[in-house]
Length: 298
Ligand code: NAD
Image (cartoon, rainbow, N blue to C red; front, side, top):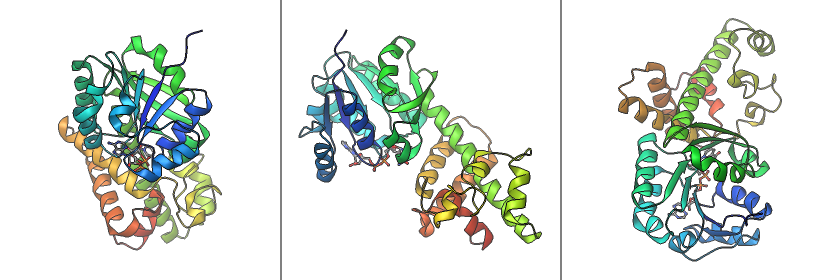
């Protein structure tokens, strides 16, 4: 049997650390790095091998995984040291959520430098990262799937190959634009129902089995009661924080602009979540937007 690939893992924050821990538990040798010393320390305490610089994390490994806050972090690191430090033909697996255009640029930079590239953004949050049940949306060349898939299977339960470079980010941005719109729609329906004298449970029982049915109602219901596990039952503790939804909708807005797409609801959802997040609710679950809709503060 072939030896497992050695992994350079950069960005060991809320998502990256549990993902790296799952790879470590699966027997992969990891050279981990984060610019924040506490993150490196946490990785070391979990038994993960760490190195002193990002360049060292990329040197001599087979696969470089990045899990950074933004596309600028990714492009800066690629340009400044990652691509130069890696041995030829290294696979750069970019798992952060970033702009589709930046993902394609990152892939182009990697390929021009003699490497291979794939984008594999995730959904499932910190809970999914810890449990190894993430969904990966994969933008990769078909010939690299045999190498990428077994690796991702240790961190996720579902891997969808969406196409070539940038296709993973494209799928993620489309899904999250729909999610933002559907949550606002669900919240508006429940507030209207309240004003028309409907009990939450009665409206839930109808929507969840009728044509308005969606994840924002059946799994992440914005009112407390009908779905016991939804964040509404714990004072809207995330879950999926409004700041992350605002970020993802900003990426959707950027993609709409790049493609000259007139998507009025997507653009409006981006503006509403930006306002909600900026005005004190960045750390609230995104379903908490129902409270701003109810009190008319959006
Ligand atoms: P985070 O801020 O907790 O972690 C990012 C880490 O990257 C930080 O520890 C930071 O210090 C590190 N970093 C930044 N630049 C670096 C560099 N050059 N070298 C090494 N380390 C560097 O963010 P997170 O919540 O883990 O999210 C990571 C990515 O995953 C984001 O793009 C986010 O949008 C996406 N995402 C997050 C969630 C979630 O629920 N948190 C869900 C899905 C996707």
